[in-house]
Every structure is written in structure tokens, then in C-alpha cells.
Image (cartoon, rainbow, N blue to C red; front, side):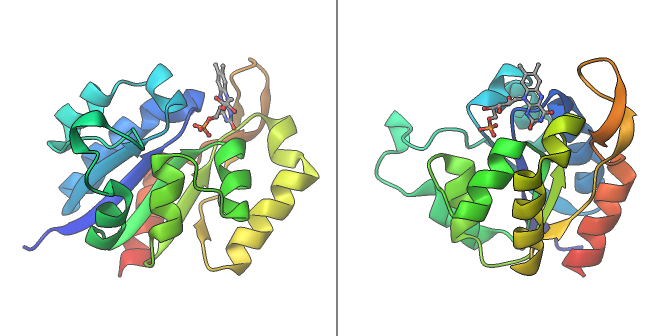
Length: 179
Ligand SMILES: Cc1cc2nc3c(=O)[nH]c(=O)nc-3n(C[C@H](O)[C@H](O)[C@H](O)COP(=O)(O)O)c2cc1C
């Protein structure tokens, strides 16, 4: 079976560890996974974890010294059939909706021309914030696919909407969108 290339973007959410499981499952489903992490995501899970799981180098710097001659975001965007961002922070969503590309993940997203699936995870206050709701609606209208978060225990300890959707629901959406 030929493997499909995909990008998994990981942002600085407490749910970042769940992306490890996503990498494992999506590889079993036949994807060759390249992980792209924001600076903040590395505070939650290491690049080493994703490199060991995926067997591929992680992209996490916009200006890596040893590869300064190539535009990695462009080669990443050109190489993959589908991009998943899970978990996606409020910060990432707001910047994505504005076309901001000030890190390697956002830059790859802006350059990406194939289907994108976004799985938000955040505190309920952030998720219900009308600005974030508006950004999500806007991105949906632009053709981005969302896997809505669910109610569950949040980092603050209480129950609320904003918990990352179950991993199997995210995998289901990726398979549906990637055909
Ligand atoms: C312990 C902790 C957990 C956090 N979890 C989330 C989260 O689940 N969702 C979110 O939108 N922001 C969360 N944040 C805030 C983000 O880390 C912060 O907005 C960061 O700038 C996002 O960076 P990024 O979007 O470039 O990855 C958390 C912060 C801390 C300290």
C-alpha cells in the first residue's frame, strides 16, 4: 500500500500529549506523518517524542541554522496530501483566520493547498469567546474542516466545553476528508 503523506501540527495546549496517540493511529492507517510544532508546543511534548513515534524529523523552527538555505514550510506544504492541526489553540485559530504566518506551523498552513482538519482544544471561556467563535466560523467558510471539541475536564479542573474531541473522532474526520 502506498502511504499518504500528512502533516500533524501541534500547538501549545495541555492536550498536546494526545497528538502522540494521533500520530501512532494515523501511521497504522497508512499515513507517513511529519509533525510540525509551535515553540510553545515544545513546552508540553518534546520533538524527540514525535520524531521517535513518526520516524521523521520534526519541523519546529522557522529559521533553523543548519537548513537556512531552504524554505521548509514550502516543501512541507507541497509534500503532504492532508494537514491536521490537533490540538489547535485559540491563538493558532485566531492567527490562522488572519493569515498570520509568523512561525513554521502557521507558515506551512498558509502555504498549504490541500484539505486541512483543525481540532480545537481550549478552556471553555476561550472557546465561547465570540471572537474565537467568529474565527472558527470564518475558517469553516473558507473550507477548513473542524472536529468540534466536547465537554470534559479542563486544565482548570472544572468541566466545560473545549476539551479536545476524542482521538477516534479526529481520525475518522481525517479519513473522511482524505478520501
Ligand atoms: C498549562 C497551560 C495549558 C494551556 N492549554 C491551552 C489550551 O488547551 N488551549 C489554548 O488555546 N491555550 C492553552 N494555553 C495557552 C497557550 O499555551 C498560549 O496561548 C500560547 O501562546 C499558544 O501558542 P501557540 O498557539 O503558538 O502554540 C495553555 C497554557 C498553559 C500554561
